[in-house]
Length: 314
Image (cartoon, rainbow, N blue to C red; front, top):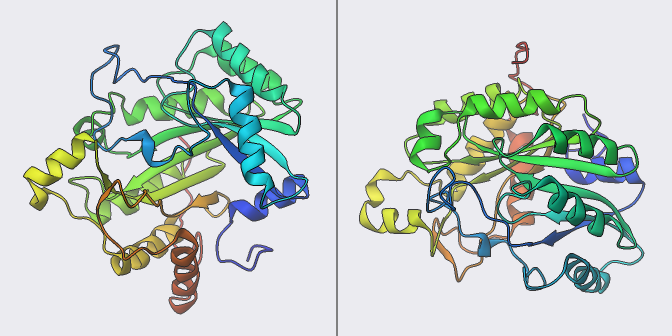
């Protein structure tokens, strides 16, 4: 069992173990686009996407990287003292640009005092060898985490939600980044249209074959100003959204099928109530749901990796 006493490897314990103290992420929005938005691969973006669901007030693309980080530190400094920070390039695809422009942005973030590393959210089809090599170089001095949006391991689902990339491209991206010295993260959405619980449990098995260090998971939420919100309004019967109780039962089974050395950073997402269409869980906070997940694992006498069977990596 992990040192934290939890029945899974939790991200908070990983950070404290690595850095010896709390390290806070500060989100940055630089106004990036995505290839499924600008016509490079498609238009409209992912059908579930509305980036306003996770951008804090200080995180605005009309502000410089330095300004966003400085304001973020002031925001978190009210609650936490003398901590270090990770610059989190979060909104849209944060490796989707020229190498020189990306290099300049990352270096600006790392030049801000108390910033000790980068977390870069991206897609598996937007990563050049030149950038991989540069991130590998940075990782010799800083903590560098590259976080890929996998979302699903099923190509039919990826096509349905307009991701405009395949799971094979995800596998290729992880292979290219393996053993480069930086941390590899993954993001997965559970409950996308058309997927059964068997399909979703298989996600755990397929992701466990990848060289993933950290995994973020959350249930599908329908948010306003997304294509999926219109689809849900027109044909709600095509969605099988998780209730809170059903998700608690399912996510604990999902955890049990994961490779036991994957660090679990998140189990749910909490869209702002003014943007959330469905499902409505009665205003439960993230920490409340996590506490229930911990309790459910104890009740089921389950833990991360309980049902994991080793399979060779891709």
